[in-house]
Image (cartoon, rainbow, N blue to C red; front, side, top):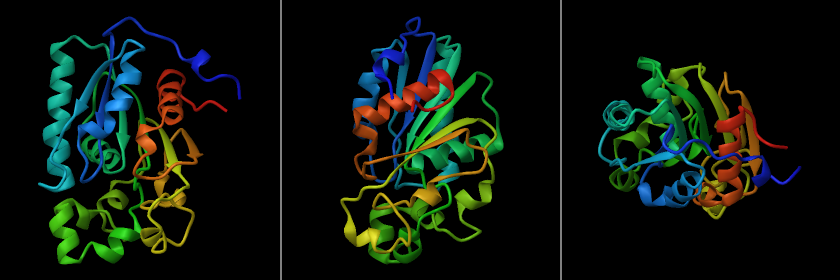
Length: 227
């Protein structure tokens, strides 16, 4: 692969935005490195900080994505992209299942449980796990009635990056496939996505790896990952 940085181009400052959505039990701080790297290319960055443990997926999506879109509108943004980590990707799918975004560009999901995760199948019903993770944790299983599996195929330009390394061998044992410690490579995928890539990182840190962020930006700019 050629030098990836050389393929990434700056844009007119503030003409396009990238909305960042962190994962379950995380905060916007987990996306700070991505925010800094992407802003250097001229993008307006909206790093959403939402209380992921406080409500169900639909409620979180409708409130906090709507707020970010309103900010884009007030600032005259011409095109809106998304970069999500883990459950943040399911929030985006849930939002777009109900309504459209007029200026939607492209989206990249990092380690999304697009078909749920076996970890939630096994631990989601535990009282302590529920207490620590909130109501959304019960919606991320692998059964047909889970939120990700009821949402169906995506109909927007989406690239997905999954990890195949783990720092959580305990959780990895619950997953009968190559995985990142939370989500398997197979369950990160979703029908309708435009491109898919596996990178050697874990679920907890994939969104902080420069090589991953650069691949995400390449998809946002070109519609495919660099190989």
